[in-house]
Image 1: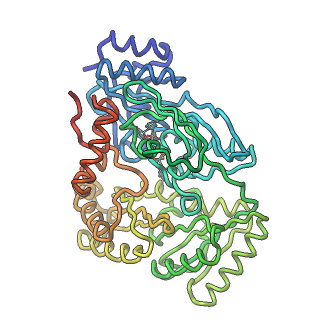
Image 2: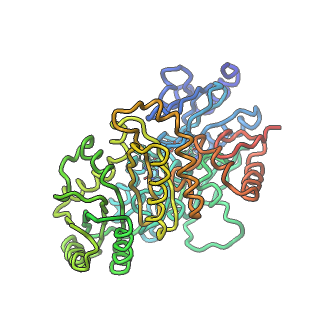
Image 3: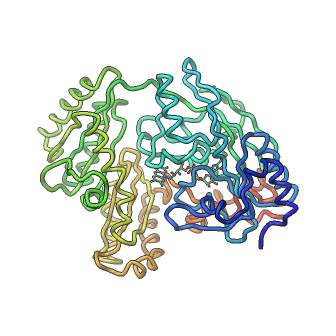
Length: 477
Ligand SMILES: Cc1cc2nc3c(=O)[nH]c(=O)nc-3n(C[C@H](O)[C@H](O)[C@H](O)COP(=O)(O)OP(=O)(O)OC[C@H]3O[C@@H](n4cnc5c(N)ncnc54)[C@H](O)[C@@H]3O)c2cc1C
């Protein structure tokens, strides 16, 4: 079944025929995500160029009760940006809305359209002598609208917060076509409910974000990273606390990884050089920034690590000597997710707990996983300073990947149940989308589910905004 031709024409007239894709080969890149986990069909893919066009699209969608799936760079990991299999939904991709409307260095803000690619925004900020600190491995493709809609995290959250913390104002088109213009640059504004906050992290289920005002920061003059080898997650936690105390806001990243996932990255990624000689069961990548110079950052970090070595808190350490080495250390960390693909089937968990519970979490999940499959390979890495781990499990070496994947629900449940006992979250960064909708329904309290459903109905009474994502609410009338 496809969309009725008359309706296709009405939608196409809004954006112009060239920007309304109907042929299978043209629509294909918008209907599946790169890992191949989620694929769907659509009646049409629309590429609007302005807020007015998005408004007209949603007004028509409301009139005709057509389901809309907003899409940014299509890098989401939970299938939120992919239509269902009906062929009746319309994908609205914001990529043509890629204008930076204003950079205001005096107010430390940038006003950008939703389709601006994150990396382009970082570059524009830098050209204006400012830092836009959101940083993800997908930054060459993901877009500001997608970042806000998924409340993206990444490697700089420790120092600057996640996408929500970086957003001061939003322009959003509501499901009935009305435009909420809240593009303000205010750090302080306590005038009623936080409407902006509702759209951030809503994964396109409440409206389409068309533009945002984002915060900028001074550019750091110096950056240095250190690679540390340590004995256990408990030792890494101790290191984290000492480093945070000593460095304060100069500590901008604290990433933890086990030896298994480092070996995957070294084997399959672009960086082949282990940062440390010797074997270490756990590793930390730590970044230190200075507003003076690289040399200042390096000497402060060296002094700090020397005291940690003396206190026996770490086994070995290497400090980046130049930009090339800094990038090489980060590349080892950033290649971890990708390199797991080459080790066969893997089951992924994006979990968070209060930072003090990270060692207990790793211990308890390790036990739970080994009970299910003693030969499973645990690839544990993530943003320890944020209490967030990517706790992935690769199939046993030489085992049957399909059989392993078929057991995913057992593993997910085992890991998520441990997380729940520690007051944690089963989706720290990546959202719910279609992948984790049932897990949300299983684990969220009835009161929070009722409130979320009420919000959904209030904003989208016809249920046309990204149906089937996040919540299972039947709101169609
Ligand atoms: C290699 C890799 C590394 C990653 N690393 C991280 C990481 O460190 N931290 C992290 O948080 N995520 C990470 N991600 C996930 C992903 O990149 C982020 O979630 C990103 O913010 C999604 O942006 P996007 O433009 O690709 O959005 P899409 O994937 O296109 O969409 C994501 C969701 O937002 C909705 N949406 C998109 N645009 C709009 C809009 N304008 N208005 C309303 N709704 C919209 C979609 O419907 C969907 O539900 C990673 C992904 C990859 C592939």
